[in-house]
Length: 136
Image (cartoon, rainbow, N blue to C red; front, side, top):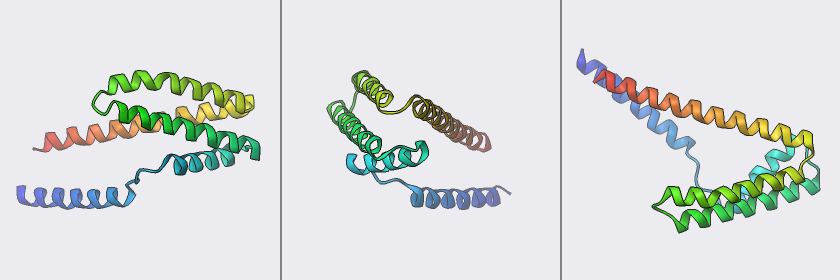
């Protein structure tokens, strides 16, 4: 019985590893990330060409600064997080000045939804780990 369960677990684990490998996201350059984000927001928020160009620049600047901070503090997440906070606040202020009030509200809602989904996914992963520990 243990052998069967162990075989099933090993098979499921192997499938999971392959599924994650195929979905893995390669690190994108700041330019690629800014292009993807600005185009997505352009469609979802109904941005005009001027707004899309400004959003691209905002994302590019933010991503570049964030990467510089991460490189500056590779082993100190707290210092990096503290230095990133004003960058994030400036980005948010710039977004607010670029978007219409309706677009900004929709963008905020999109961010909240994405954050909730990310937390749920993380919690599911933790629950899976706990279940695996219980099977041992």
